[in-house]
Amino acid sequence: MRLLVDILHPAHVHVFGALAKELGSRGHDVRFTLRDKDVARELLDQHGIGYELLSRQRQGVGLAGEFVQRSARLWHVAAAFRPHFFAGVMGPSITAVGRLRRTLTRDRARIAVFYNTEIARLTNTVVYPLADYVCTPDSYWAKVYGNHVTYPGYHELTYLHPHRFKPDPEVPRRHGIDPTLPYFVVRFVSYKSSHDLGIAGLTLSQKIALVTTLREFGRVYISSEGALPPELEPYKLRSPASDMHQVLAFARLLVGESATMASEAAVLGVTSFYISPFGRGFTDDQERRYQLVYNFNGARFRADWMSDVRRLAADPHLVTRAQAAQDRLLHEKTDVTLWMVDFFEREYKKHFG
Image 1 (spheres, rainbow, N blue to C red):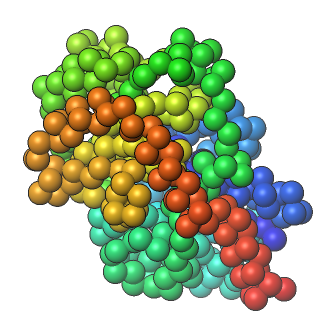
Image 2: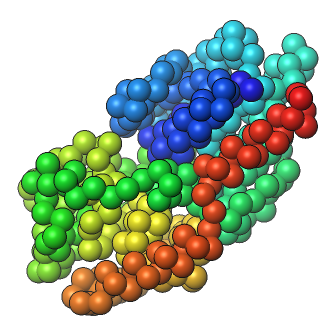
């Protein structure tokens, strides 16, 4: 089986990296194409994963030109590799190229889009009907116009499930972080993704107040997609992106604007706050079922979340309670990488076997 994976965001490297390793061990061939965004290239290099660079991230009106460029280059990669499956998160280029090749060359390759972001309505409306499979967590609540396939889990369980991730206290120590002492991770995002158009996050005064509150209870480390203002620069986390999950695994609490990192914290047994104008079905699920995420989205975005942050930061039972909730989560959810392996092998036998 030949699988072509298109990477648009650093988080997608994690989602498909473990899948590539599992499929490779079973004799299948997996190739990667890349949109150079943030640390995606760095992560692929650090994991020793080869790739074909298709484009670099553009913004605003440049997104259309980038889409044309990367789709044209993806066409040539697919013509040489001849994949049985295209796969990706969100998937605008793989659906366009996959469908066009099917029409013009009678290529039989199937298209699998994995997504978990309900608010990307325009992309979802255009992409989903073109895909052969739209694979989402079973907590996904938006309408899917296409062949909807669900699984009991989250994207983050592809790479942070205990089958393939083990917390190592020596990693944060290498970066000057003592995992035995209380510390907090704060995450700020740039709001430059296509589904973030017109969205504004926390203000500078809110960010400063958050850090001021947390440092009463331990050290604070900030992970940020964009440059930090001078007031917050001393708190910048200096570890490489490849070690982020090891740092997060020993944190007392995560507070930030990233749904992905909130979910990562949850599956690692770390309580998190997801503060953003728009929510996600998977973080709602992690709050409702396990109380591992506190969502302040929609009307709650303007609520007094700071008092809850202070209350939990001071709670002596926070870590014990979160670890018990993680045990329940892992018992009820699946190893999503193995689910993906079974899915692709089953569909390969059905359509190409």
